[in-house]
Image (cartoon, rainbow, N blue to C red; front, top):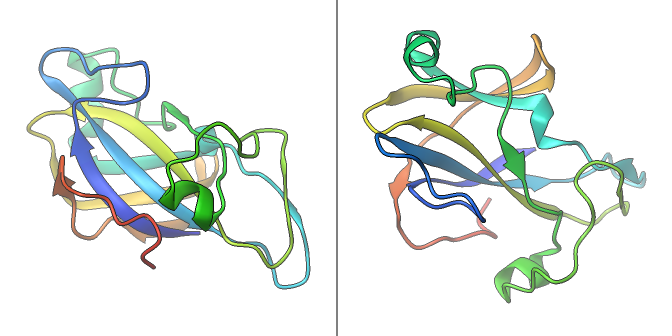
Length: 149
């Protein structure tokens, strides 16, 4: 899994952020082991960890420090470039084809003033991180480039 784009945005599908909060929205590129299909991983097994998350969670119960809020279906490069969100593969029970890259959009509520300078995406079973990826540059409501990376 790789981060293709990271963005702060008050909007997520069907869920605008409450006052004082925003969404960290990630476009992730997921590929299986060459020659092998895979079960679609669910975004609830990922979390963006950042300095101050636990303290923020104590003041705002909407802040999650143990898993992402949700995620889209999985889309091929063509589907996501064309914003064809009517199709796709379910993010929990779907099967991803071998040798085919897919993109998924996942998000998590964070405080508007959160320090995300050292933020990382943790992948794996909740509480047992398996793969930690620095978020890198995070744009503000900027143009997406979902097939980069």
